[in-house]
Image (cartoon, rainbow over all chains, first blue to last red; front, side, top):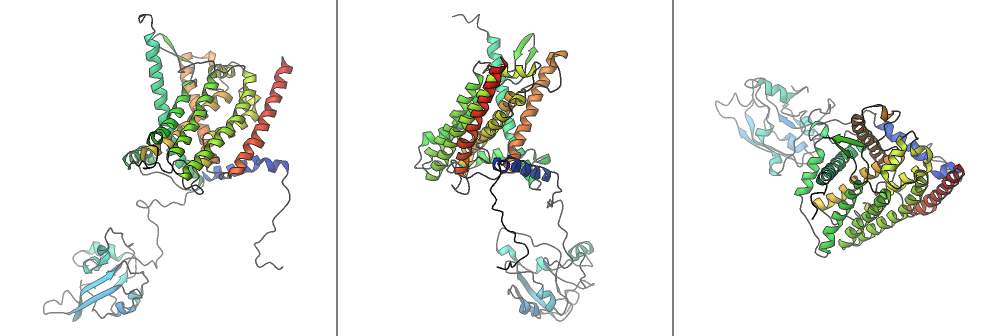
Length: 180
Length: 347
């Protein structure tokens, strides 16, 4: 029969000689192997002190972006919700009133914007779908929670800090990613 | 009443010694659990416990505290008296063995020469064997009293394993006793100090048999068939929780410590410091260094125990019995015969 892979090796059915039957040489060999492992480099990442380096395309927690003047980008068009394969995004639109021009960039904005983090699969399709560069997946790892309802993230959880009033927090939330 | 002639100082001396030895073996056993986890981690390229205290050194305390605070469960259908007796017996027999071990020569405190040994009885090693073979009752009663068939099976396996290996162990020891001519551990240790080689030189095969049997007696891997997680759920301590389980596990570590000490005493010169002539130096200092030396040998043995545990997989039960009855016992017998012939021809 022809072998399907290059890896298979014929098994030796040769009866063991005395030295092999005692097993002690094999045991000692095994013990030297385990002993040598004591001095190997440990691949462990000690989490809270050290963090794993993520790849630049890592998709973490979502942020709702603002522009340079601190106005919300989102116009509640709903394309992200449509694009979402897990149907995790819900929103309610509202109309911008007089005197709210410094809060919202266009006439329509999301009065309520929720992402159900229990459903979200961090695929990033919302980011792709958004025509206004309003939603981005940041570098932050989604935190755990003890209660299910805490994992439905509202606007206050998602909205990026205001770049005008809190530039440091904004820079931190933005991270190294290229967010416009 | 002749209380006046009663040597109260001796009583106090021995009580203090017992307290010290028991606390030392408890602390060593405690840190052996930590050491076990660390050694396992290193051998598997992990870091091991490192959260509680510096390098995780408070881990044993945290583990103990956790065990104390866990819920204590005694199954309804169990025999409650025996159920509690099991772990206590395991612990008790583990602790009792250290009574005859010579931990060092003599130290002088306030003009009193104090032997660093609780009891120098002339049947020392027999006493050890007697107590160790009692240790199997801990497992057996624990498994029986749980009223759980898995526990009972595991306890049976453990018991028959201990009994099987005790034979080979005893025979390998007889060969040693032919050379030393004494059952007292103190005498055996001193013989190796006074100009002689260590017994390992005369009895390498005997030591190997003794060592393998010690592994089996302590129920250490690869002979830990009485606590087979995979085939018998958890083994003899399945129904145990909280500190009663802790006692079983702890007794294993004390056993390991004691058998390491015994092996160091029997085969590796006890409190002898290699390549040093003790009589040339201050006896007080040498006594202390002797204790350190014995502890160092013991710790090396404990490490070897762990090393083996994290290297070899567990035996299958028939393999275990084969090794015991068809391998070690004949080998020990041959070893004994050869030793006897050599000893006789030397005379």
